[in-house]
Image 1 (tube, rainbow, N blue to C red):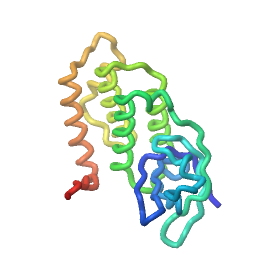
Image 2: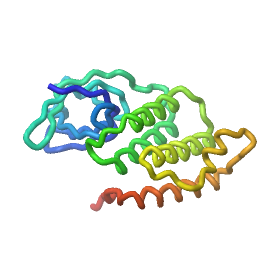
Image 3: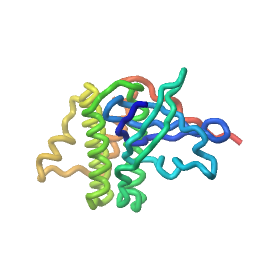
Image 4: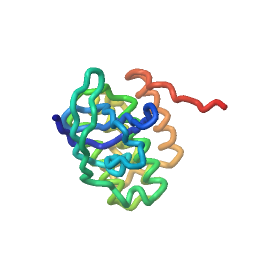
Length: 196
């Protein structure tokens, strides 16, 4: 059996009772694991596989997929989840990490960036403008860790100098700019639309 310490960044239902759990781990980078039978009412593991939790996960390699066998929660970031805007920010961070990283490309710096971002959201009181600023700063650091640091370092200069103020409009424009940077790395998977 193998073990990892990781943050659960995505969950997808598979078949009638299974789930694919995507975690970003210290040891393997992004990794997908099948949690067999976890959606059954009697499943013991289901309560320990919450999104955005830091956990120790045990797994065994299968023929085509890795099968999750044990999980032990280390941190749930409860204060972050009680605030809707913080929870949405955390989900955005998880989406960015999932969409723009390659499976099993080990990057301990990225793991610590993700963990640090969730811990900061959990501990720090932030107004809406501060939260947007924080998300832009995370995106800048994320690109920097991947080796795609943008030339415009406004967000970093602003963080180091209390006199620099950025408006909400400027932060929203930065969000669009970062979106273009991400698309240039490689295209994200298309978002599925619900059609009924």
